[in-house]
Length: 201
Image (cartoon, rainbow, N blue to C red; front, side):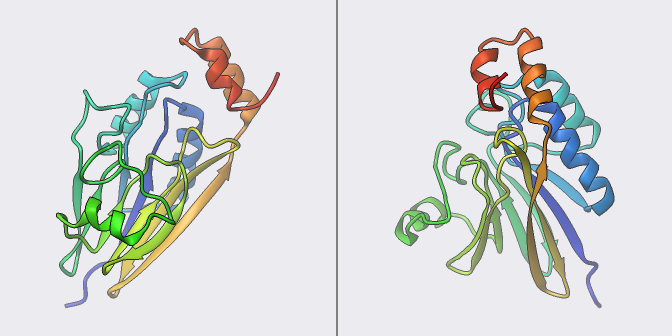
């Protein structure tokens, strides 16, 4: 019997940026993925943390623990993709939310971070850098950052159909001036610092 196709949207590193999250969710309305999963750092440091978390809850988006969420959430999340394939989600690595995996991380380092875990697909955030790469038979994905990679919101769509895996990395333009104003008007601590990521007055 043929298995139904599966589409998973991966988001990460929102950092309390509600406008960026809303931009991605609007794009996802058109795509209609089966699942939306957040790879951590959902709320901390941004101007609208409470609203961002509320919006994630509202759309039923599970969130794994990021280095800025360590007292709030679980460290990993597994999702069956069918055909005996599993998607393992984490923030830095399955070993630690502080680990860093980038497109050029040496194979030996990856083995140390990933060897105790088996999954056809693994997805992490933390670095705010999009990539797709292979390691020891596993596809590794970093969707980038929704909320703190000016001037765009980044995410990934993962499709599995007829045993074939396809990953699309997306970058959506954001209104940086609006995000900067929102941060400065929010009353949040360190507003000038955070707004500085989004340009000058």
